[in-house]
Image 1 (cartoon, rainbow, N blue to C red):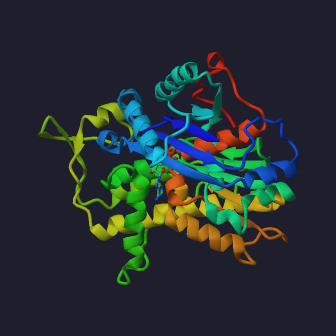
Image 2: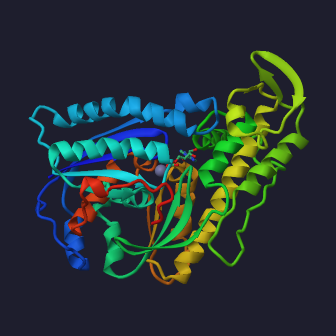
Image 3: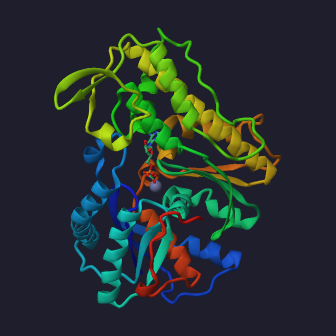
Length: 414
Ligand code: KG4
Ligand code: ZN
């Protein structure tokens, strides 16, 4: 069977086509663990997974501007759709999809509607029902996309224990207890900024490009590779790390970076409007993002090494909190697996340290073996293949809806 997935939840327009082989095309009401497991091993091929990024458009704003993103989705989606079909077709004649799926939330409402309206038209034309997909669940299920899972499939969690899922993206930071596919409980989440949002804002303070996560990771890697500067005197807090809950808070971390940055500055960033320099001092974090977007900050004269050291410290502060709380939850809920997802899960250092911590005897929080799963990087950031594969598992449970019953919910919970 062929599954078509669409994601327009934030600033990436994505369409994917997945072929599932050896699967029965009749939906069944699967609930039994064993049946789910055999179905999860169905061989599949990602025939296409086109992601059209709007990064260049939003870079000057230092974040996503929803109405601009909506306009771009409207422009890009038909093009991305055609490209995905063309790529999937290959040399054979392409069959009509058997299943169509779209992200309905959470995300930016105007953006979500672009994908949803598009798929509703498609559903009418193709006479198909739609599988509505939760973006957070899709980030988790992205772990099922990789063939390298054959050795140690995450489906093990269905064989005897829950999993702790950490979804870390630009819009969300959630720690989720997953007892089975479709059975989730949010244990904690960020009370303010998401981890990715923190990286994006810190990058802006440091004069690094958007999206901030990869830029900070690159600076941090440079710092670590520099033997001349192995230790910095920059110290940032690890917010809420030892609190008796599973919530997070990253807004204070960003403020701590700002204060430290200002304290050690050699020149304050000044505002430039319409090419003219103004000496008026501004705090980039207190200025509404849209008006910020129209201004340019001159790069303050900062020591290159200082920026690298700050990037390394902020990255480590975020990693420390994420790993500590995830391991704590793993222990409390006797989880068999830790499952990562979301754009921040593409962070090399986070992946490496999670791998080490979840396998070390001292780091191992339970007497059980803890499996650690993270999708390949291209499936961590937003993509439609994760929507398609999530939809397949919902299809196996017999869940699909008539196009008239598909709506957007920007604040959808898992
Ligand atoms: O999941 P995603 O593509 O979109 C949302 O659903 O939000 O995540 C985007 C976020 C951005 O904040 C970006 O800075 C962050 O993921 N990100 C990273 C890396 N790649 C993307 N953060 C840290 N390290 C990375 N390598
Ligand atoms: Zn996402």
